[in-house]
Amino acid sequence: MPATESSRRTEARPQSFTGVSMRDLLAAGEAAAAISTPPRAPEPHPRPQPRLAGPVNGHREAA
Image 1 (spheres, one colour):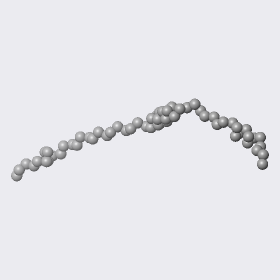
Image 2 (tube, one colour):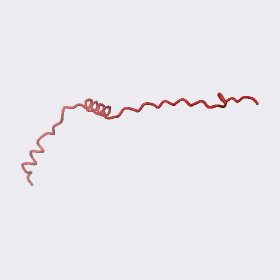
Image 3 (cartoon, rainbow, N blue to C red):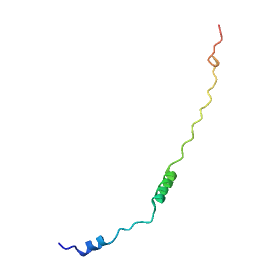
Image 4 (spheres, one colour):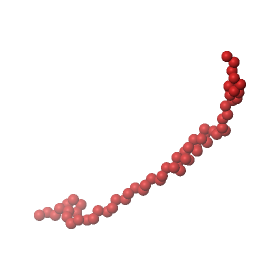
């Protein structure tokens, strides 16, 4: 069975590739991830606990 004219053209035409190197492609992906990632929230600082009446440093007064 003879090949049609349109199938001959697509087989004879080489695939075209873009001129982007893998290094540039990976760098672009890293940059996109860095830009789209929100900054981390700051670490919460613990509030100082109010001093209550009672034992100081775990020691009690002798009776």
